[in-house]
Image (cartoon, rainbow over all chains, first blue to last red; front, side, top):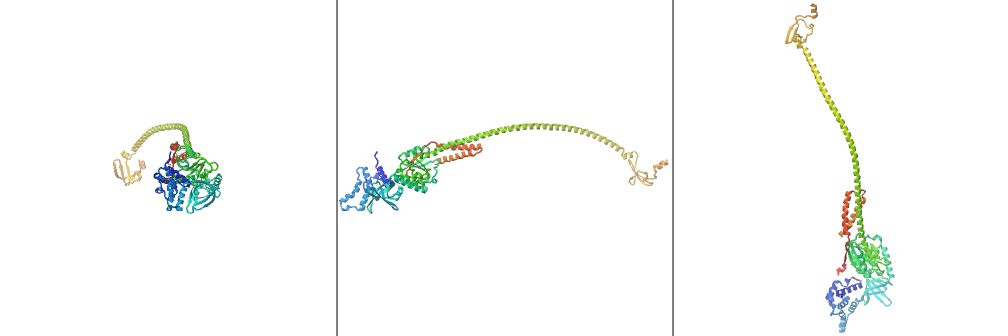
Length: 513
Length: 68
């Protein structure tokens, strides 16, 4: 299938960016690529009318862009015509002669399409504030190079004279001195020996700083749900990871990056930073890659990347294969495993463990309750039995008590009955005796009445006796009166006053008689 | 996020129930029944969450690309 013009332009842009060691949009944004494909500019002026292309970019990439557009279209003016314009003009006359600057612009425009990957030995290093200048040499020649500090830091290589390196960059003539330099985007150490040395030195440095210290490690979250994944879209790692992740309803946000070569460092760092900006949205950051040699894993031994992982706000899990030495990025991670498969299984394990734990707890809770229920049931049965026994005892006691009570009541009843009979007897006796007493009293009263009647003075008076009183005093003897005394005589039917004429003593009368 | 939280919480609550049973010298059957009911509900919810379901796989666009 034939690529569209836009695809070809994008491919060229990505390749150019890789060579320059910058992000794609810094070469040309997608919108500009779209406009280029749509408008298909054929001249410099056409290019300058495209949004996103100004004089600088036109100088730098114009020739390459026009060439691509020409190759992809029919009956169009070529880009070469544009750049040959000057030469054609020069043949027209003196007025068309180029200035040095114009000429160098043209040269640079041509050179911009000559991005290259070059191997050589470092013969000088001059590190400035913003730029590092260095020279590469081999048996045949010397090449001046420069790299911007931010790219130099990302490269993770500390250039030293004698190092053998591979650089990627674009040649360029520096107009003020006319010197040709390679503007480097990527530096890689060359050879296992140099890489090992750099690895060991950086490892020691980071160890001394405590970057790998166990105290800094965080436990991976239980049941991670939202996973930020960084790895390559191609290769076995992504397949191994997804295959072994299990089916737990996880949300995996996958940010594809290169995982090899110096571009990998930049892309992985960008991906990590992208996820960090939304750290609340992720439970874990996973970075995986298949195994490889020290050289192929250089990105994972890059100081900036290692520090980025060490300072991640999201707990990190690295599954990066290796042959001999564990990558420094893995050492800086909270948890490291040796393969993408192991990384996936680490995540999956938490969920499988949860399933097992759930089963255990389910069993435990129901067994505990069943046991408690049986214990309670047994106790209740025992209580019931005890209660029944106690009830029997109570019934027996109550029965005995009732018998005794009945006996007591019987005794009381008997006693009451006896008392009642006694009472009746006493009552009858009393009444009888009382009647007798009354009778006796009645007789006595009668006798007394009769006696009283017999001894009633009035009866004596009625019989002819009388009572004589002298001066109010009863006269019981003749000796109490004298002749002449006035006496009061009481008779039965009245009283009479009399005067004593003579007094006669009975004894004297007797004598007289 | 809600589901995850609830699963984590469910497991923690279940652990609390397990500990409750373990800590009791003599389990009160009435209280135990309440705990079992609560536990059964949590287990049911957790089982639903733990049932095998497909992962959601999203390739994210980096902000840098969005800026283009």
